[in-house]
Length: 223
Image (cartoon, rainbow, N blue to C red; front, side):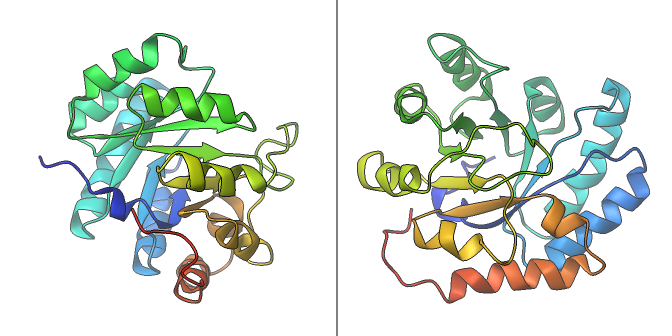
């Protein structure tokens, strides 16, 4: 496989909800793809390994059909076994002083490595040094998925765009009402769970989130 261009780490980043029903999950993700999602992250914190593998395989097929990168949350071994496009890791999964570089080596140069940096700029600096392809800050707003998450000021996004030269994903509590604030702060992508997958019309919601990027003023360079 060829390395996914950083230019594709932008737009609506659809992050899957915990869901045991694989068929329903597939339909929801397909609707998000039809609505314009630029990346899909498979995330299921409560699933068994067997269910994760089953669901990731279904989503992999959908993403391939739509020519859209599939990122696996946490599980490098699933990414490698399926040939998925990359992995997203959080601080609880890695030690930025050592094993992030190991994760980069495991993935090789042709897969995406994304890192959650929460509200700490120094973690973003370390992530870049150890081979991250994009970084994520959050929670940018009050999050229903992680209600106790620390707040990440939008100024972190602007600073990262100016100083690090990596795509920046905003995550946490993002809705159609506040997403433009993160985009205007410089977010390359917005990671959305509830405001996308817990709606009555996932495809329409995806279209509406995607349209926010077409209306964005070109304040920041594209990666």
